Structures are given as C-alpha cells and as structure tokens.
Image 1: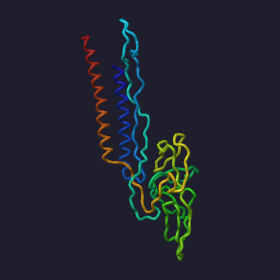
Image 2: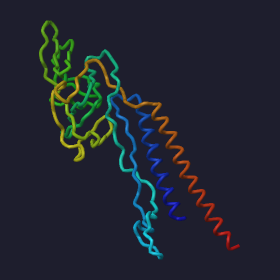
Image 3: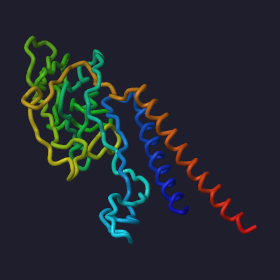
Image 4: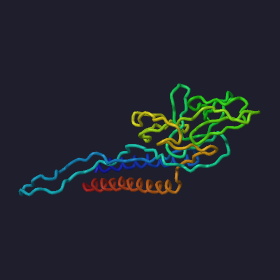
Length: 262
C-alpha cells in the first residue's frame, strides 16, 4: 500500500506542474509573440513480479507478465511555436514575422537572444531597440532627421529624411531559425537563447526559402487559446482530484488493516 501512496504522489506532482504551465499560458494570453507551452509526461519504471514466458509448477508457460508501475513524471514543457494572429498597430517600427524565424537581439553581455516580439522603438541615438533597450542585431541606426521608416517584407529598412523625396537604405534585417526551436530556452522578456538541444541558428533574409516574411506596422499576438487552456485546466484538476482520492483510499485501507488486531 505504501507503493500506491508513492504512485499517487507522483501523479499529484505531475498535475501540479501541468496546472502551473497552463496558468503561465493564461497569464500571457495578451503578451506579444508569446508561445504557449504544454507539459509532457512519461510513466516511471516498472517492477516485474512475474516475467512472461516463465514456467509454472505444472510446467505451463505463463503467457502474461505481472508488473507494477511506479507512477508518472514530467519530462518536459515543450513550447508550441505555431503562428499567432497578426494585429495591425499603425506604428512604423512594429514588426511581425509571418512564418518561421526569430528577430535577433544583442544583449548587454554581447550574446544574442531571439524573439518573436517585434515591438521596436528608436533609442535616443536612433538605434532600433526592443522594449528592454536591446538593439536589433547589426545595430540599425536611423538618421537624426528621419520622418518616416519603411520596412519591406524581406526586411529591408529605408528611412526618409526631412527635405528629401528619396528614402535611404539603412540595412536589412536578418532572421534566425533553428532545426529544433522547442530546444530553445526561454529566459523571460519574450526572449529565447540557444541551447545544445536547439542547435545553432540558421540565418537568412526574410522571405527567402524556409524563412517567414516581415509585416510592418503589425504585431504577432500570443498563440494561447483560452478555451483550450480552460479545458486543459479542468482535465488537470480532475486528474489531481483522482490521485488525491487514491491517497484517501489507501489511508482507509491502512486504517482497516490496523483495526483488524483490535
């Protein structure tokens, strides 16, 4: 019966993490470029009590095995990088990727972080940065007298200066993608960093083979489906409840066994 208690405890722990994951998804339902996660589970190792194929006392071959599992464990929280809806904003430096790819941002320590959040702004020096002040890789700098900015689907940035009728090319945004984007590590701030599991980034121009196109004056919404998450929350709650009832049942059985000697 002690085994049953341990098994139920693993189930409750797994569902607790499942609920935590769903709660995080719901908390970020309005976060730009957010990608929902899902908890993944596996069953734990089994104890074999009687092996299949063994021969019993009468010489008969036992056709089935007797084994007992030891519960469940969470093996990962995988991000779902499916496309979110594009919402127009009217801001010239709001960018959304339609398809695969990430924007590259340079962090203060010189390393590169990746994001789907394209809400950019000009710094006091004219450098295009995100909300945390991290510059878009290649440090695109707008002229001081820029009156408007045009960013094409292939990421080409052009700035129109005061008194001019012809825009000047500032540069071209290069996107990054990964063989296994699920292996990226989220670090908060709508940012991801590469890991051994994700592999090294593959770089390319927006709109080229395998890379999405850039849409100006729009942002990608979170891909969280509220109804789907609420259903998942109910399922997780019921699973947790069933496991807690297992604990109560085992407790009752232990109490009954202890009362046999009275």
